[in-house]
Image (tube, rainbow, N blue to C red):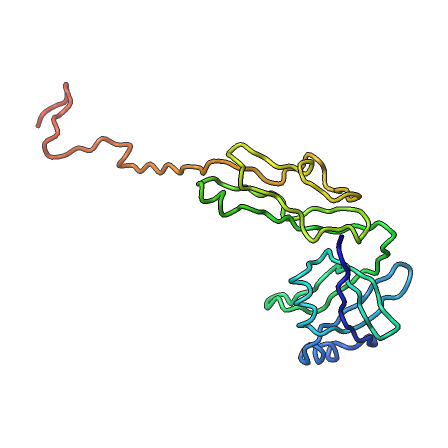
Length: 212
C-alpha cells in the first residue's frame, strides 16, 4: 500500500509575481492545493524537502501536507510547472484526496532487466512510459514493474499483460501496446561502387564492342 509522506508547508496569501520570485530565491517552492467546489489553498514548501520526497516516492504517492499541529491535508501531486528554458520548478499543484474515494493517477512503468536485454543484442521498442489508473489512493503503486530479462525477439507486452494491485484498474485500453522486442535492424548501405562493375586498365572489352 502507498504510505503517506509528510511535508511541512507554510500557508500564504496569493502573492504577486515579485513575491513568488522572492520565495524561490529563498529556497521555497510556491504551491497550491486544489479542492472540489472550494477555493484553492496557497502555500509554500522548502524546495529541497519537496525534491527529496518526489525523487524517493514519485508523483503518485500520497502526501500529508502539514501546515501546523492541527491542520494537515491529504493530497497528491497533480502538476509541476517549469520555466520554459531552465526547466526550473516554478509552482506545484496538489489535489486534495480522500482515502475512501476513488481517483485517477498516471503511474510510471519501470523496466527491469533492460541492460541484460540489450547485452543480448536485442532491440527494445517502448511505446508507453506510463499508464493512467483508477482506484483508492492508498492502493496506488509508485510504479508498475515489467521484467524484460527473459524476453526474446517477437515478444510483446500490452496493457492487459500488466500486473496491477488489487482494486486498481487501468483506464488505458487493454490492447494498447506497451513495448515489443525485436532483432536490431541491419542498415544496408549500398554505394554506387558496390552496384557497378569496376573497370580497370586490364579489363577486357565486351564482345562486339568497337576497338579503338
